[in-house]
Length: 244
Length: 244
DNA sequence: CGTCAAATTGACAAGGCTCAAGTGCCGTGG
DNA sequence: CCACGGCACTTGAGCCTTGTCAATTTGACG
Image (cartoon, rainbow over all chains, first blue to last red):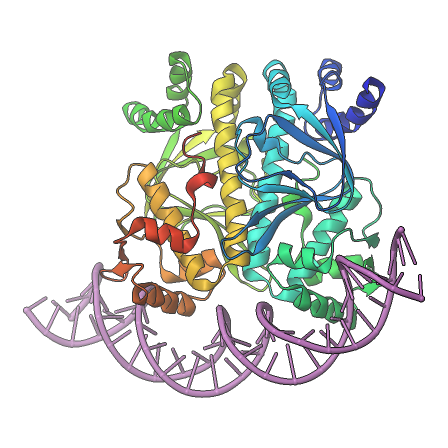
């Protein structure tokens, strides 16, 4: 597992390094973190609300989301995650989970002991800053989602979600925003945007009819005019703080 | 202003101390922070999206909110704040604002230079941890709001917002949850819950009719059966991480 | 070729919005 | 002290976006 580990964590280092410039000593401590790697099926729950958590999760392959469930049974997806994302920085400082972590597709996850991560933070302010920043980007995205769900109509809402997905995907080096495969179902999109899957379906059709978006198969999206798409959705990448 | 400053910051110290136990040295560095105190009228914008920020704000008196504006002009309030709250921890690490900060009522705000706060964090891991935790609580509240706006119907949604307000108010030592004066207009409640003020008005009436809530004057709320109210709203205080 | 989940479509219901008018409260000025 | 003005709050009527229910089609995979 050791060779494995160094490979995996290299990506982690790059991510943190982008959030806050790290020294080679920082690099060493990060690569020195121990980890447990697990393969998970789609729709597995990694963490459930109320769980006592002692590890942070790093998503290595596949897609995941964070979600909460309302009293009436409604499921609300609160964020999507892609390879390279840290799934729950917050457990660095809170040991009880306040939401669920669920895989969307089959996935590979690295679990890093929180205590080790804390120690690294203590010895390296730069690493701490990087992780902190990551958490702040998270929060910024949540704010945008509140706006999205609260104040945009169904069609724009979905368009905005797609813009965010495409942008983060590109920024994670997973491909161009103009053409991509969605990992989530229309039900998932609905749960993320506060709509029903039926209405998501109709809204996607509307986006096609308006020429904003083309689909090749149900999950493959092509955006001919990416700037137009962003304008249509009222999407500005600022809140993602990509060039921190 | 110096005597003033120590007074004010005492509250700040208490808040951080609750989030992470601080030493007396930590206390000194916090009380040693310089600050600029300003009185603001209601509906003033403290920070606007896109602003370059070099100070963190601490709300000393009055109420404020954070909000974003959609392309179509819709205003979405993303969080409410009360005396003692730090309004933008995130500017500790991001210098461009991604949302607006607005007063709800007349308010008194302390501005603390970010550089000084950063220095304190560098020298005191405990202070850093406290501020970090505060930011994480923020994020947790945003997640709950996404759920609130996305998956609860109008009446429950408003009930939930009131529960949160009452709980945080109590926790901030501002009074019992069973009886309080709301600082915000019904328009504000609408902007926070993704509803129109008209529908907020009707929903409040519904809450009264169902016996969940009593009003004495438009803004004074009385909740006879507080546990029942929480059950009705599906409110559980866990996400507020009050007993960190 | 059968199976199952996801996607699609239609008909209808309903929750929430829009528009519009009216009321109540409070501070200001005469 | 009263009249006025403005803002927030109320209330009603009708519309429209989105939800519900249910049936059908599609597509991936064994």
